[in-house]
Image (cartoon, rainbow, N blue to C red):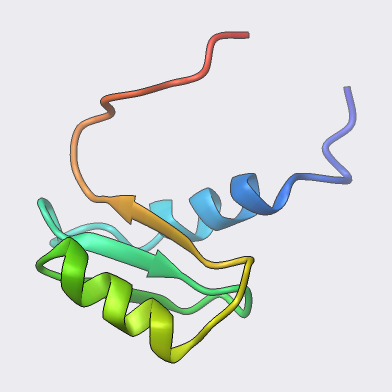
Length: 71
């Protein structure tokens, strides 16, 4: 299996994984250019996302995995 092409969501999650230490319980906005912006509430991170509108923004909750993918 080749990993030459990964989806936008997989790329966003890789960027997210590299920055989450020390942000347990916060929300993370990952922008298409690789910025990771943390906020303590979902409302605040949504406001930050609104300031940087893009259909390629991803928001994650930093913490334990609550939902995964089975392959």
